[in-house]
Length: 320
Ligand SMILES: Nc1nc2c(ncn2[C@@H]2O[C@H](COP(=O)(O)OP(=O)(O)OP(=O)(O)O)[C@@H](O)[C@H]2O)c(=O)[nH]1
Ligand SMILES: [Mg+2]
Image 1 (cartoon, rainbow, N blue to C red):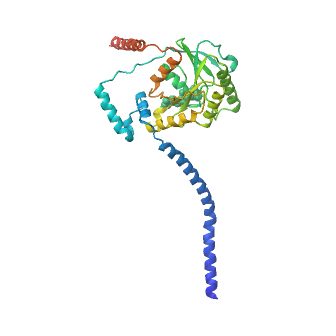
Image 2 (cartoon, rainbow, N blue to C red; image 1 turned 60 degrees about the horizontal axis):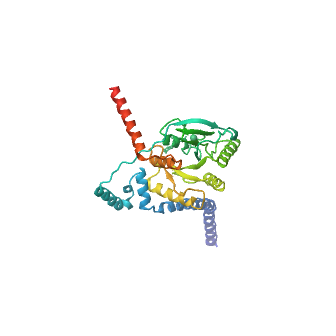
């Protein structure tokens, strides 16, 4: 009997001991399970991203734009070597033409739809989430610093119209999806942007600027759907590409191209740039000049470059 009682008390103690941690660990287990599932979900998204295999052609395109060499990706080291060998055999190293935009000058700002300037020259507009680098991109394209930029989101709060040497206009727009702006301001900006975008006959294309590190977020997708439904032609520009390693940049392009493939008014090719290193900027300038019907023969740009170099050397020799 005594043995029975001792056994019974041992069992109940051990049950208690077992139960206590089990109950508490049940909650922990529950939250752990949740956390684990979430991290697995995140991991699997990331894994999915990492599993994408960009083609050698895409790497080659990025290399030509100045985003580093195929060699940086082990997988294509052999392809790269072969390419280099061919290049040396051919001896083709024609320097790339440097395209330039004429002088940029600010001519109008609009905080409300009624102050949007009347239509005149053809326009392209730059839009995107706050702080993504729209204003910096304008500066980089025009090789200037006149467009105000900031590391704090929400700097541009109106439509800013710039004249590009009186050939066409570039429009810098406020950012959308700015979490810290109050609701009234957000509604006001959205109304301003939507009115401009949907009524402007001279607007040739909207460039939607996206941070290459993040790809399309919910706010971007909403904006793209709005553009698509209003039949406004738009093209994605991936910027801040200097902050992404080459294989991830190539994967990001693949994902974004897939995201927009169903949108009828999207230009299917994605522009890739870095305003900081200027990679991709020259090619983008060429595409803009072509779009606006102002692309001149390469001799025209070569003559501009020659004049620039001449001026610089004269300045240097004057100093000495
Ligand atoms: N590394 C890097 N930084 C960039 C690039 N482009 C812009 N930035 C930085 O990003 C920050 C925001 O740039 P802005 O050009 O002011 O961004 P925005 O989209 O005009 O911002 P809002 O006017 O507030 O909507 C600044 O600190 C820039 O220096 C880029 O290509 N690479
Ligand atoms: Mg800005």
